[in-house]
Image (cartoon, rainbow, N blue to C red; front, top):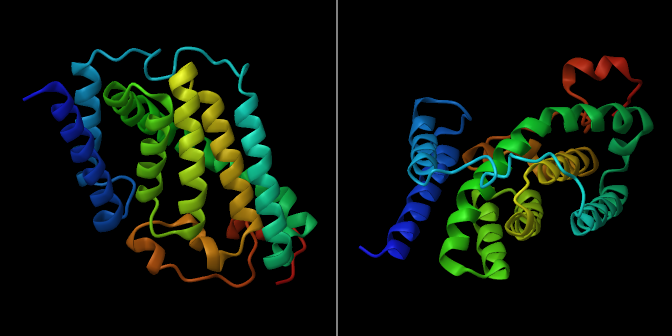
Length: 230
């Protein structure tokens, strides 16, 4: 079996294992989680991946002007949509408390997703395509499909995944990517209506979501800290 075919089969196998986790298990951690994580970890060991190839070696935020421009544009777009569709959720108390709380809750998951997206999928796709633009397009599409059927996340992850992959191939650093990821996710969660993003649920969990009264991005157990009327 030729190496490109083997790499392609590995990517496809891992991708469908992740999809299976999302659609048929739903929980982030379960016995089934061992399968996709096991395949990814084994691949890293076999390929002798290093902190540098996984994007974890240098905590450097310089040279990411494209990323910050994309982040600013994404926030601006989300804000405009939010003002028209979800004005009540943009109240001062809710947004000021909700944004930092959501950001803190998303930083670690965002870093994990960026390591898997870039340190695993992008590295392997790049070994096949040898073209940064094509790698970014394929990686963005895969990242988007994994977040189906959530319409908000489909849009954010398609373009966010492409930008992330494009920058990773260039600089191999997941830290600024994770910060931008968590920032945009927190802002989108707070600014857009629950009926749109369903609490950022994906897979079958998206269809099982039940909207809560109001539409505040502050976790329920902390909503008593602010004055907020639905």
